[in-house]
Amino acid sequence: MDKDVNRLAEWLAYRRRVAVISGAGCSTASGIGDYRDDDGSWKRNPPVQMQDFVRDQATRRRYWARSMLGWPMMSRARPNGAHAALAAMETRGWLNGLITQNVDGLHQAAGHRQVLDLHGRLAEVVCLQCDVRYPRSAMQQLLHRSNAFMQDVMASAAPDGDADIADDLDLSAFRVPDCRRCGGVLKPDVVFYGDSVPRTRVAEAYAMVESADALLVVGSSLMVFSSFRFCRRAQELGLPMAAVNRGVTRADQWIDLKIEDDCARVLPAVLESMDGKEKV
Image (cartoon, rainbow, N blue to C red; front, side):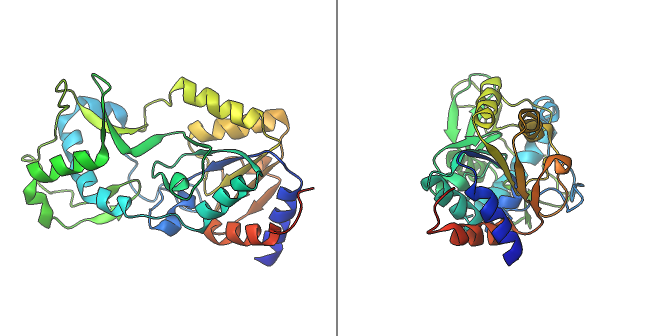
């Protein structure tokens, strides 16, 4: 790995405003699973679709039942070496900003300040009718209070605060809390598949890339368009690109330097290699 570390350290040494895109691979060392394998294919069933969540009460029941069991595992996650290294690079003035596809808040927990949560944050719940927001912890209390029978259900952790439960588990008695203000449907304040990233957020991400002198991809296959478009914009601008990601990315044809390894191992080593050195 030493050769790769030195190559990326040298690449970073010549850049003063690096924009970063991070994905699920940045949080796997924190115990949060990812969706895709090294070939960019789904490891599991795709996440819930926005239209299904809104239209179908049974889909909402199953989503919140899984979330009730998965959230405690997600909320206990702590930043790993990749988050800490990126936060340290920001402190040293090397980064122009970070766009994350993750909804776990671990970049902020590591002390990173200029973070754009492209897909939102799981820590809040929003009413689809009146737009009021509640802490996810408050939603968890309501779920537990209304669904005591779920305490003994076996579940295993899944990506983004989800959990795997038996397909044949009877959830007809599961109660999903409504908005206390208007009685509307509550959902996590994140962008579900089939939904759109808010335009203002997209514009902010574009501005971050357009004011950068390079783009670094960390732990993302870029298979979803919501993140890939920023690499496409970087390519249009002629910005150099590097990536630390296990497996393929959708932007491989544009990436100048790629390290196929765990970013939680690579980035701390890169930071150590660069410590004490002046940026060129």
